[in-house]
Image (cartoon, rainbow, N blue to C red; front, side):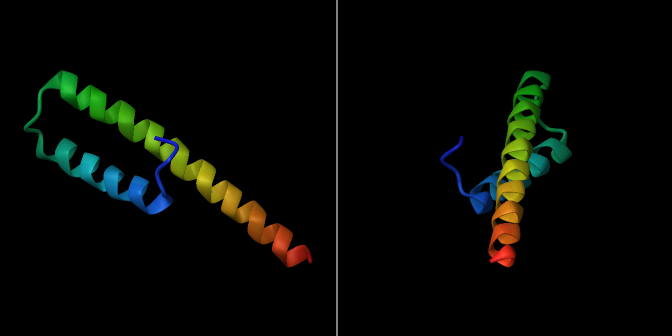
Length: 61
């Protein structure tokens, strides 16, 4: 999962949300998708934090 780009992670999150909103999947699959979405959200948050830190460093120079 860590080899995903930010854009790929966001796209997968969109897919997961769409699947969960349909309410057409079984509970086990929904839980699995929710867990994947939680991990992807954390990954995206980490990437954004790193990008913000990099911007801050660039602005200092």
